[in-house]
Amino acid sequence: MDSIHALLIAPSTPETQQLGELLTDSSTVRFRIDSVEHMDQALARLRTTRPDIAFLDTAVPGGQGPDDFCRLQNAFAGLPVIVLAGVDDLCSAAQTVQCGAHSYLVKSELDGEALIRHVRHAVRRRRAEADEFRSPMFHLAQQQFLKAAQLMRLDDNIRERLLHPQRTLVVTLPFRRDDYRHVETVIGYRVQHVLTMGPTKGGIRYHEDVDLGEVSAMAMWMTWKCALMHLPFGGAKGGVRIDPTALSRAEKQRLTRRYTMEIIDMIGPERDIPAPDMGTNEQVMAWLMDTYSQQVGRAVPAVVTGKPVVLGGSQGRKEATGRGLVFAIQEAAQHLRMKLDQSTAVVQGFGNVGSHAARFLAELGTRVLAVSDVSGALYHPQGLPIDAVSEYVEQHGSLKGCTLGERLTNQEMLELPCDILVPAALQDQITKENAERIQCKLLAEGANGPTTLEADEILDRRGVFVIPDILGNAGGVTVSYFEWVQDTQNLTWTLDEINDRLHTIMAGAFQRVLNHAQGDSIDVRTAALIEGIDRVAKAKLIRGLFP
Ligand code: NAD
Image (cartoon, rainbow, N blue to C red; front, side, top):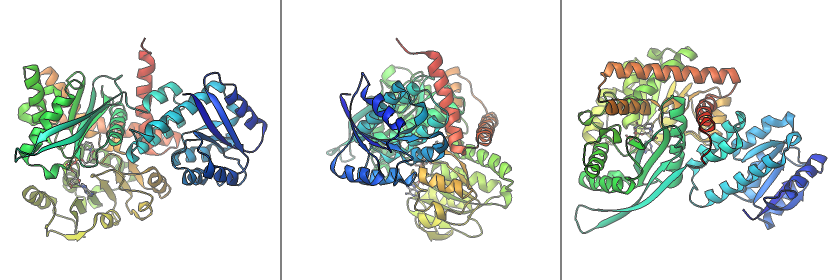
């Protein structure tokens, strides 16, 4: 990193002067410092200059607290900002980090080395984001991580090492369309976030919006999820940027086999074990397992999880994410003194996770008022007959044309009054635009990343209890772990054994997170993240640094 242009937005005080000196005294980075003492001057300056970083003092004249960060971003989108706070102003500083600032420093505790480290991280991250990692989902994953890291005072080196994935592979791969004249070339990814904990583990997504940032975000969440559940894996994720609904079965098979070949050096039962995610299923895992096995010359069931039972798949894996989510909902309901047989639920997404969650909730007596998929939502004020809806989707491929209830849009459905809302489709569904209108008591996240940071704040203020994604949907990877254990040891467990073990692990993780959140007076998502991050950080510190 050669020279850094820093904008210092702070009143003239001895602390500000000390900060300037620490920057100019650095022997590793050359700084060009531009100082302004009023927020309006800073905004005017950003119209004419493009600094690499800004330091924003919470006590700057003309400042408006956490909103200052947004004002700076409006003037220069993507500007990395480090907040300078007094000891009595840490709450506002933390809120600014949550809005997107890189980090905050306490003015009375400034130390040259830490200061330069923060600057380097922030500038590097901005440069990486401006290129390959630019993605709202990755930004969300990083911002959640940074918020937790700040609260738990995570070691700076560990923080930098965990902010981006350790390994990423981007491939372009061709496959033949059914007419055998046409060759389609698509982009695929495999990302391994942390290699410290054991093999890496994570699903494969086929979706037209998949990009490196999205896959990296999900790999990062997988790391925290596995650590939170005490599973011996680091996080990974893969994907292909394609609309799977536009592929025939034969095309999907050719695509899957070619994608497997492209990533084959990265995967293996002791390296990295894929599983299904959106747009992929048991059949895709069977093709992946077969392609891998053909290459190594013997059957290797343990290379994937979520495969059919007849190939070494586990009982209960298909429905595990939905079942695990409902186990977590049962724990939350007990905490909130909610009776599930007198409650109502709304489920967004009627694929693997959503349809099973809806079914298990209905079995507990909860009235499932609405479900939805990409074609829209289906609503019945008395509760939908979930088995009949599942049968319809099985026969017709989606909810389109289903007359078992009234049709609503997905947005209308999310805002229905209900006790439990289960987002189980895509990321970025509950945002600052609709969070004020969400009317549930319990938000149980089946999807990865369905709630933005701003929406989290609003839900927290409105008293909505959130089961965060890394806890709520962890049943999938937990039973994937059981599948891997059975495959590597050549034994099989019954469905009852699987469900009992899953229940014990989900309930244990829920209680650990709840106790942490209550003990430290923090939100449940941050508590879950801290539980996961702390385990990974400890493992990294104990293993030490090679060489
Ligand atoms: P899936 O492909 O089986 O189902 C996705 C569902 O979402 C489909 O019903 C689809 O029609 C619907 N959908 C797509 N776009 C939509 C939109 N704009 N509005 C409403 N619905 C829409 O996928 P899945 O495996 O059930 O995964 C769903 C979510 O759960 C994803 O975020 C995934 O990462 C997460 N997840 C899945 C697992 C698993 O074991 N499958 C595990 C953990 C997390």
